[in-house]
Amino acid sequence: MTALLRTEGIKKHFGGVQALDGATIEVREGTVAGLIGPNGSGKTTLFNVITGYERADEGQVCFADQVITNAAPDKVFAAGIGRTFQLTRIFARLTVLENMLVAAQARDRPDRPRNPLARFGRDAWTHQRRRAMELLQFIGIERHADLLAGSLSYGQRKLLELAYVLVADPRVILLDEPAGGVNPTLINHIAERIRELNSRGTTFLIVEHNMEFVMGLCSSITVLESGAAVASGPPEMIRTDKRVLDAYLGADLEEDPR
Image 1 (cartoon, helix red, strand yellow):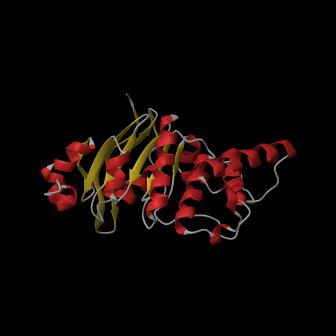
Image 2 (tube, helix red, strand yellow; image 1 turned 120 degrees about the vertical axis):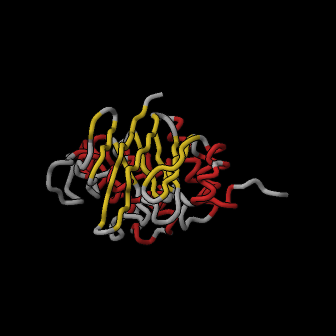
């Protein structure tokens, strides 16, 4: 199994703060990988560097054997890397369906200035609308298609953001805390959608603090501490790695004494 996405020695400073200090990770094609670590360890910064929202000071980002370090976000998106954000980024004053059509236009016209609701040709409009509704149905929020996105619950917004990303049919999806602030029923629903997409060939890299969610989904987990990877391996290894327990997990992943 080959590495679809990898970072090599990524460093990133913000003034005098070193957010990433040689961060090296690898995500193998067809897997669900996890990225965990304490607050401030550099997880979201690494996502931002991979997807072009922050520039790396040193190191490389490689995707599908191509170097994409410091490529613009739209170029990264067009290359096949989708991502969600810790705080959802949707168009609250557009309907759920209109949000999806914005995503379709961003995919089809990545290099051209665009009005978010510019008209498609009739055939393209019909196709894009049908595709958008299919994705909303897959995610489970199709009944909200005509509602303003700002009226959705926080968990439903996370589902919409995932559907938004799926419009581009990415090879790998980076999820930033998909279970954060979401009720248990929706957490299970999100996990089921991730498993289904992964069974169809989509690769995932997930940042998450919910350890039950991570351990139940991921086949490999990398742990960041102070901007560098301190451990990487299957969940059962991470669960008992002393460096991980000392750095972050503590009693959270130790065996239940009962």
